[in-house]
Length: 127
Image 1 (cartoon, rainbow, N blue to C red):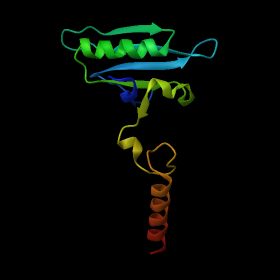
Image 2: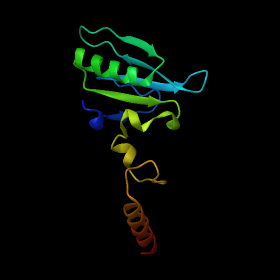
Image 3: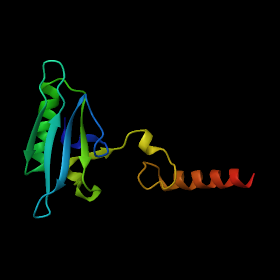
Image 4: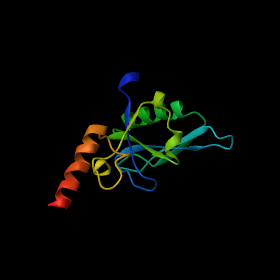
């Protein structure tokens, strides 16, 4: 996968991802991001977990494990949203997480789409 095309789906802490390699990112003792990768046992593939001090190395290892074990994708779990570095790629939310219920800050809506959505909701309330 090219550097410009890297994109990962993010999932909540504790959500299973049975057909994926998961990259968990948290802050190390010095505050820098560290990572672990893991995947579930499936068919002839044993479950595994490996820790990395460098997130880029963890993402590269996750991509290699995904290909080696013929898994569907690499997903990311963040201990804190601010740990993600955009140089590692783009994070995507599940389509369900994009639903504009309440605050729209964690969605992929543009400002114009958010405004139109709010205007439509207000219009329905007034009807």
